[in-house]
Amino acid sequence: MKKLSIIFLSLVAATAFAAAKVVKRGAPLSKAAATPLASVLAEPDHYTKDAVIVEGTIEKACTRKGCWMELVPAGGGDGVRVTFKDYGFFIPLDSKGMKARAEGVTKIDVLSKDDADHLTSEGAKLKRNADGTAREVSFVANGVELTK
Image (tube, rainbow, N blue to C red; front, side, top):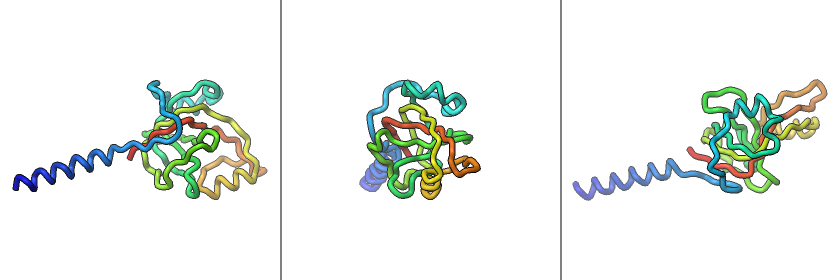
């Protein structure tokens, strides 16, 4: 019975450790406090030069390579598509639903119709203009940390 208790406790500890495993990609994150994602989205021009940390839940991710993710605040609301600096790293294809911390800057672009079509085909949610183009506020991350 004692041996069974030890095995059970070992399994519980191993499961708890595995559940809290952090997947790290790109550059290590700084120790800076997170900036609310809603603040970044409300005034994206203020966050284009100096890196900040944002946090949220991955609502969608690239289904082909893991080359982008859509991050939404934990309580819901508008999200942002996060890409990875210089196409330098990818996230696991099964990242949807994971909690994420990302450090980087905002980027504001007008996407061509072809680029918007491509992203939409991968699952991205864009607000399209009448001509098929899309104005996009995105976040370019130097590094990310994901947890289940």
